[in-house]
Image (cartoon, rainbow, N blue to C red; front, side, top):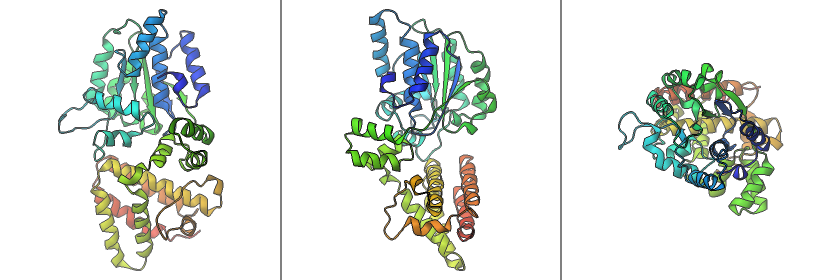
Length: 381
């Protein structure tokens, strides 16, 4: 995976290449940016530049690059969120999932955590980077590089590292063995301990432009120009979402349908206590889906409310959401999302995500959220 295959981020690529070429490679770097920006692809290309560029012999360089094509270079290490399965019953670590991980990255380089958990049939669980993973990282990096040069440890979705794991890695990240490079990737910087952040050199990624996304859809996905431009606008600068929209991958989890059922019931509940039963039934349905699905759906709700707010305040150039549900019109819904209630709605949604992440009772969390929405949806400017 060479820099030439990376989508956008030319200024970051130039900066990273300059560091390698001058022999000044930070031992710990934190890649921070929005989902769908392609940070994982760039990190792998950067690792290849570090590990393969040092080989002066063209044959060795070619052999090194060949290993990267299969993500099988012995000095490239990965850590990513995992969970227990029927085969891995205790203490799951990335090594147990390396085959599906390689398939996932090679086929879905822009995929997010939810895509990864679906890929390994764990969408009903929460993936974490645990202290067992941290212990494995310590063991791997204590060994000499297989090919005598650098070792690269790439930690994807690093915000899913629990506190115990982060504390175990602190010293290693601060003072790693010679010629060891850490690359931590996150779209949720607040999920990473400040002590970890302070030990890393931060590299900030911007979202991909609509033009960049549209061009890639045309060239790499054989997408018609008009459709590519439409999807580039609809995806909110998230190339992964653009691919989902293109291939219509959302059918497994009809988030739009669930959201509209929810807000319609919440709207009817004012002065009609019987409708509370509908909200309870809705909460039970969503609670049965698994925590990863619940979190993904609640993030979708935040995005939907934000789009409604932008519609209400007539900033049409920022509105990309196009609903497909019959008899639902975003412009008709938008007046109910305004400056008086939007922050309160966001607070309730973020609070629900927080408690679900910490294994709270999903039915109670979602029922409480629904009751709060019945009050907030009618709050006027």
